[in-house]
Image (cartoon, rainbow, N blue to C red; front, side, top):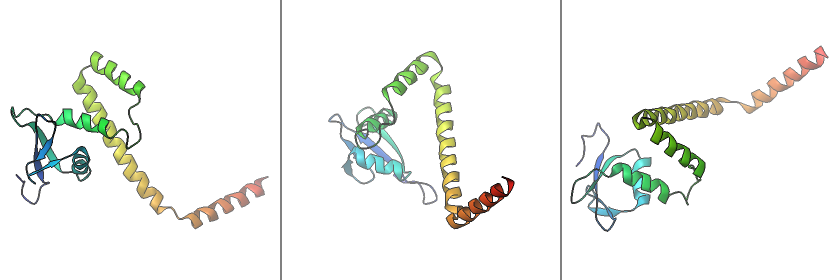
Length: 141
């Protein structure tokens, strides 16, 4: 099932009892690596239990994080996970989720802004400015 062309593609993925994931739009089984590609390509999807129709998206995405921990940097240290667990048990998890999502959004915005700023830097111009500053400092001393 797809949305119209002005919107992102939507994929329904069914999870079977043998832990296999089935991409219903392509009529094929997929693995965690392919699921990660859907995320990277910003393709909207939902993962359902094939028998009950229960939404398993969150559970499978968390599992995907741990499947990929060996192939990437270990973002979630033991200390972080313990602190997160304690916070979730003490506070309203909805508030924490909103806070963490906002933090990630701010981080992505910052990253985009800084990337653009670094691309604008002219190294030669920067070196000339440093030389000029050195001259001015030497005049003061």
